[in-house]
Length: 241
Image (spheres, rainbow, N blue to C red):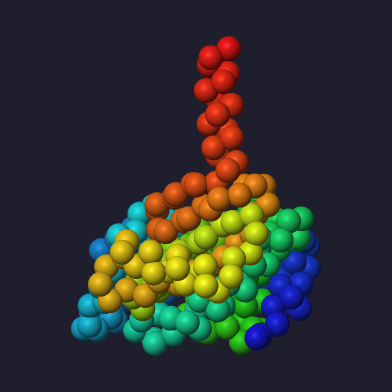
């Protein structure tokens, strides 16, 4: 796996000092033209009018959805869906570290546009990230949307799963489940997805739920935890008193 910390450590160093470097031309050509959901902060377009239309398999809304959809179209054309996912996973992981300079840099409105753009361009240029990823990060810096990276990545991952016919199911329990238990849950979940889709289960352990199970699939959330039942009982008792 590619190492991210030295690269992002440099980014934090630059961001902390708000170094002003020469701005560079930005743009992801063709992102908007073939994606009807694209809007808002438009990037450069052109040169892609004769390219095959790429269908976005899931409806995406809001800022994160629009950027993710546009990125998906470019990634499909470049046959780089998984590579770009890996790149964004690194960026999101470091950005999610509380108190890090990189996380602060991404959401600091006091950093000038010129400094923000030049810093991001200079640092990502030194990485081995895919060219589309680099241009996309430049675009987000240009439009002041760096703080949206985690949400954009989430939407992009959903589009990637849809592209592969994969449905992610998140199962939370108080104790780790056996492979047999997970397989039984997987079989039960197959009745909730379309024919041809593959169910992938990600297990999470959270002792605070005490017992039972919490299942999340897409926008559906099934809470059968003991903690929830206790909360419901407490509400009923409070009303009775």
